[in-house]
Length: 89
Image 1 (cartoon, rainbow, N blue to C red):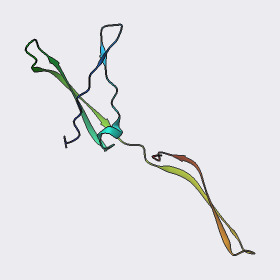
Image 2 (image 1 turned 60 degrees about the horizontal axis):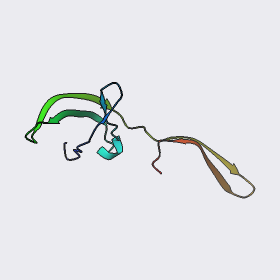
Image 3 (image 1 turned 120 degrees about the vertical axis):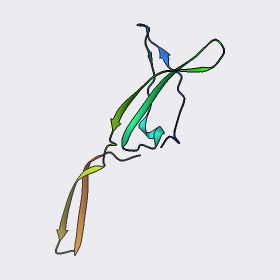
Image 4 (image 1 turned 180 degrees about the vertical axis):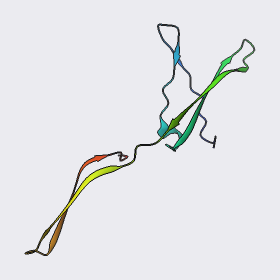
């Protein structure tokens, strides 16, 4: 959908280009195709469309290395998760 539209103000670079960095997390972090559109504001203050571009995005999936060991004597299990990746917070 387009319920997460954010208007960004770009930063002019020394080479004359303009850049904006957008976070997928500010756009529901959803998998799929993201669309960017460029507009400029004319002398009358109206937005004028220039161009749009698309990029496919897949959010990183959480992962971990998981081991479990048991203690026959104590009747317990020890579960260890290592190398956790892709978790928020």
